[in-house]
Image 1 (cartoon, helix red, strand yellow):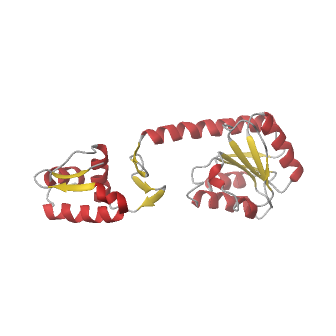
Image 2 (tube, rainbow, N blue to C red):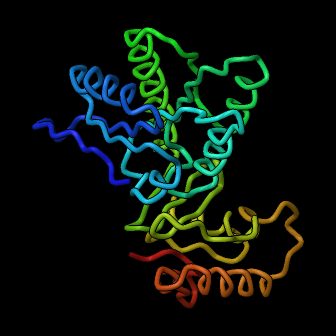
Length: 237
């Protein structure tokens, strides 16, 4: 089923996707959230949700849907997708036993609210979850170094190109991190060994081999890793 998209003149409004089979509940929440300044889309089943560009939403509010706990499976699926791995997710349900709440949170939900609930409380919970996520994103971004679409997250040691992870060994990662922190500088092999190997017993040949592999894994960005005779290696813009 196609989403019911709200039309707001506030282009900066945060977007919420509501996933709930109860159409009356969806429309009530849509009306309330729009009055609070959010943009809201509605779908009434999980399959319809996955037809959307889920990464464009700032928060997903999902009902468990049924006694089969489809919502918990949905939460796990959301966390497994690259585009929604960090998207805030709140689960709501009339099934509010301790096990269900714990399972929902363990599956990746950021919060759980039991039906029936106060819409005022729900809005407050949404704002709280969004506020926490903004703070986490700000901290994470302060630990990320970028060169165009190449990014190194120093807090997680994850390297991405065009938001897709690049699989590097620890040594390759440390070499790249060194080069990106000091772009347009050259380092001789001894300096690279000191930075990227736990024990400084590796040969200079090992440096050449690791840099060769790193270049290949970085694709076009590998061309920026330059070797200048008498100076060493560096990432040159």
